[in-house]
Amino acid sequence: KRRNPHQPEFVQAVQEVAEDIFDFIEDKEDYHSEQILRRIAEPDRVVSFRVCWEDDKGDIRVQRGWRVQNNNAIGPYKGGIRFHSSVTESVLKFLAFEQTFKNALTGLPMGGGKGGSNFNPKGKSEREIMRFCQSFMTELYRHIGPDVDVPAGDIGVGGREIGYMFGQYKRITNHFNGVLTGKGLEYGGSLIRPEATGYGAVYFLANMLATKEMDLEGKTAAISGSGNVATHAAEKIIQLGGKVLTLSDSGGFIHDPDGIDLEKLHWVKDHKNRQRGRISEYAERYSNATFHEGKTPWHVTCDVALPCATQNELLGDDARALVENGCIAVSEGANMPTDLEGVHVFKVAKLLYAPGKAANAGGVAVSGLEMSQNSLRRSWSEDELQEMLRDIMHGIHERCLTYGTQDGGYTDYVKGANIAGFKKVADAMLAFGVV
Ligand code: NDP
Image (cartoon, rainbow, N blue to C red; front, side, top):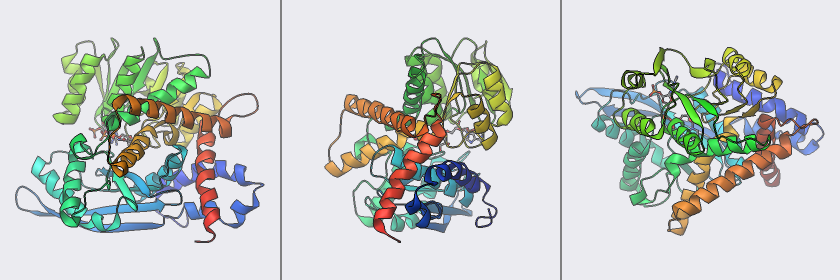
C-alpha cells in the first residue's frame, strides 16, 4: 500500500495472491532470498502517453493511454487493451499482474501485460472510434511487436477496434505480423477467438462440477454482463443443457424466468454488440422478463453463477445471498469480479469457486494459439481449436487441483491457480539470476 498509494485495485490483486504465495514459499529459501514475489509485483515498465484525436465536430480531444508490461519471464508480454471511462493506471496494473499468472497457467509461453485508455467509446461514431484507435496505435506501435508484446481486445475493444489498430500498425511499420490477437479471419485471426473466454469459463465450470459427479444439464445460471464473455458463456451453458436466467449491463440486470434461449441470445448479441443498445430493452421485448435498474443479478436463486462484466461487481453480501440461495458453483468470466470479502464467503462455504485467472484463461489461450498460427503462417480448423481449448481448460483445472486441494478433499481453486501460475514464472526468473 505504501509503495502504491491511490492504486486500490492493484493493491487488492497483489494482496490476494500474496496470501497464498507466502504459505507456499514459507520453506523455499530461493524464492525468499531472490525476492521473486516483490519482483513480479513491480511491473517491468509502465508506459503512459497522450492520445490526441479529433471528434466529428472538429474539436480536439485529449485522452491518456497506457501499456503496462508486467513480466516477460516466460514469453512476450501478452494481455488485452481496455477502452472504458473507468480505466486508470491502478486498474491496468492489477490486470497486468493477474494476466501474468493466468498466462502461465495456460501452459503456453506468454508473459503478462495490459493496456488501455480512459476513452469512453459509448456514443462515439464509427469515424471517431477509428480516429481514436489510429491515434492510440501511433504511440503504442513503438512499444509492441510479435516477439515483444502482443496486445488483444478487452472491455470496449472488439474486432472492429483491433482492425483499426492493426491497420494503423501495418501502415506505420510496413510489417504484417502477429502483433495483435483477436484479428479478423481475413487478416490472420483465429477461429473461436471471440467465443473462447466465455466457452472456456463454462468448460472450467463443467470440470469443477465433474469433481462432484455433476454436470450442467438442467442447472439454472445467473450471468452478469452482456458483452463478448457473457453472451458466449450463456451460449455454452445453453448448449450443455443449462438454463440462463439473467444478463446485465452497467444499467442493471434482466431476469427471464423462462430462460434466455439461443434465439433470445442472438437478439441480445445483435442489440448490445452491433446496435450498441441497452439490456433494459430485453424486458420490453420479452414479456415475462423483468429489468432491475442499478442492480446486479446475484440475489436471483440459481445453481451456478458466472460474473462476466467487470471487476468488483460481486460483493460480500452478494456472495452470501448466492450461498444462502443454494448456488453450488461460481466461475468468473470477468477479471476479479468478486471482492476480497466475497471470495472469503465462498471459501468458508466451500463452494466450487473458480477465480478469473483460471476460469477465463480460455481467451488468452486461443490468443496464444493465434500467435502460433501467425508464426506458422497457417490456420487450424474449428474442430482442432475447440479440442485444444477444451484440453487447455482441463489442464488448468488439473494444475489448480494439484496445488489447491487440501486435506479433507476441498479444492481452493484460488490458491491452486495462484501457486501454479507463480511457480512457473518464479522458476524462470530464478534461472535468469538477478535481473
Ligand atoms: P465487453 O465490452 O464485450 O462487455 C462488457 C460487459 O460488462 C458489458 O455488458 C458492459 O455493460 C458490462 N460492464 C462494463 N463495466 C461495467 C460496470 N462498471 N458495471 C456493470 N457492468 C459493466 O467486454 P468483455 O465481455 O470482453 O469483458 C468482460 C470481462 O471479461 C472483463 O472483466 C474482461 O477483462 C474479462 N475478460 C475478457 C476477455 C476477452 O476475451 N474478451 C478475456 C479474459 C477476461 P455496458 O454495455 O453497459 O458497458
